Image (cartoon, rainbow, N blue to C red; front, side):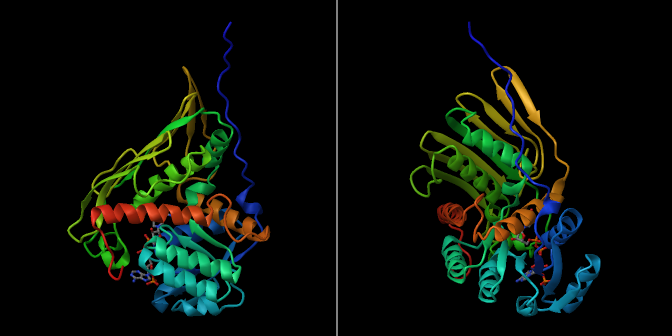
Length: 353
Ligand SMILES: NC(=O)c1ccc[n+]([C@@H]2O[C@H](COP(=O)([O-])OP(=O)(O)OC[C@H]3O[C@@H](n4cnc5c(N)ncnc54)[C@H](OP(=O)(O)O)[C@@H]3O)[C@@H](O)[C@H]2O)c1
């Protein structure tokens, strides 16, 4: 007699972000994501942003007033020189990440760098090496890695609950209604959809490949690229077909259309589906045979989920780590090597590369 049992799901191993040890944060570049970050950490964690630096004094002051940040500075240097700042959050366009991360490291600060970590792998290597030499903590702000539903998937993969994993699909497309001067379209700011949105499907495929034991994503044989450029020369739409061992991935990103923004992982025993906006807090469904079970116990939603990565960073620093065990710097580097290969295939180069 064949005995089957309904599939079950592990619980996420996430302590409350509010319980993480306090770090005092300095923000460089108070733009859109920085405001979401400041709101999220002040609402859901004990982390405190104590300084903000902008290229424009009035912008720093407005941001500080909005999020009750005690110190507002014109320029970024004063944040780095502040002895009370433990960790610097780099929230500028991609083109600025290398220089600002290196400056933060040189000032002896831990650093959280927005995705994409740098413009390319060479810059990432520089930042990683500088961080290691200085003994400070360095992390890419790939916040999906720190969300509860991601940890459910991490456990399913690590436990082999899906069997041999053969297929990953992930997409993030969003219609960009922006001025032609927006950073997304500007090669000088390392624009393009791949580093902006495409890095999420890419990171997701890398995460699955690593946890499924398939190894790093390929940069040569095994990587097929199709794409379309914007009139400014940056990539506007990218499709990737990736084969790594027995794992095949189909990844898609575009700035022309709203897409489902979902992700699925299929193995020989079971499959997992992540819903719309798979990269923010959301539900996860495990299906085995004809039975499905869904995890949907989020208590922190949308961009407030940025609180999880800040709390994780604070815990890692308290544990004496210098990088995230949930996204090692070697993996951040590997993902940028794939992005470099994709841009090379499409003929996208940033000024000075
Ligand atoms: N985690 C996420 O969900 C998420 C979402 C969106 C974006 N991001 C990432 O966050 C970073 C920033 O994106 P954003 O959408 O927040 O951009 P944004 O609103 O344009 O803000 C970027 C800020 O960078 C500063 N800056 C420094 N040098 C600059 C330059 N040369 N040109 C333009 N601005 C410059 C500006 O602040 P001051 O002039 O005041 O100094 C500007 O406000 C990017 O890496 C992006 O990929 C992450």
